[in-house]
Image (tube, rainbow, N blue to C red; front, side, top):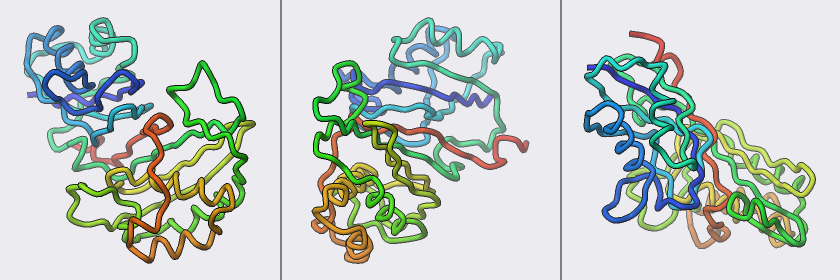
Length: 251
């Protein structure tokens, strides 16, 4: 049995998230359907994590088991021919048996994109969150640095999450501006349900002067969701990439 790793890009606008759900268009189900059409085998596609409805991915990772000796280099082309244009298989590779997209993941990077122009955008309206009030990206960048390190992120956890622990480690965090686009980027060992979108909402409060950068440290320490900002829409959120160390290089 072969273990196949896929790197996937998708526009989440038309999908009800990653996870398979009856009578709802989802990314996992679409790719599994394509795999069956191409290989004749039913598979269980395991992702590094489930993205919500409307969330995008530049480098989602998933793996599945395949019995057939299908040429690995042909898998992206074959699957893409069966998929909607809003899902693209960027790469396929055969990996060791122990590789698991979710459990062997070491780091993930998420990006939240804000269109900070007055009028917004027609073309990219489903790919960016429009916030017309001027943001101070320097104060936002100062604030986000308080999140680096291992912390209990309970203040940035949505209700209903199934995670037993809200302790996570953020390795890198930054806020940058390129013209009218403000970008928040976080790299960590894992993220709680809606964590990035709540952090983004809190940083917007910093950017408009509603709270000070140092208040983010107090919000973090409070471990109280009511202290943090609102949950921003999924429109601006991207799973950028997933890192696995050497697990996929060692047999």
